[in-house]
Length: 73
Image (cartoon, rainbow, N blue to C red; front, side, top):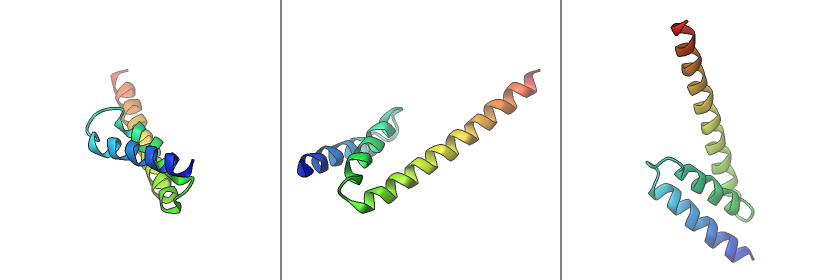
């Protein structure tokens, strides 16, 4: 089971990195890191970094959208 998780996690991470410019590819990267984080401690650190980067990016985008809506009215 461990080797299957590592194999599928590696493939998902590879797809996520390879198609990084496409929307939705981040889901492959996060999914791969989740699978790898069960067995590889370093993957947990990368998963935490990705999650924090996504959270800060979402907050920035929310602020931009909110400012744009406020400036219209």
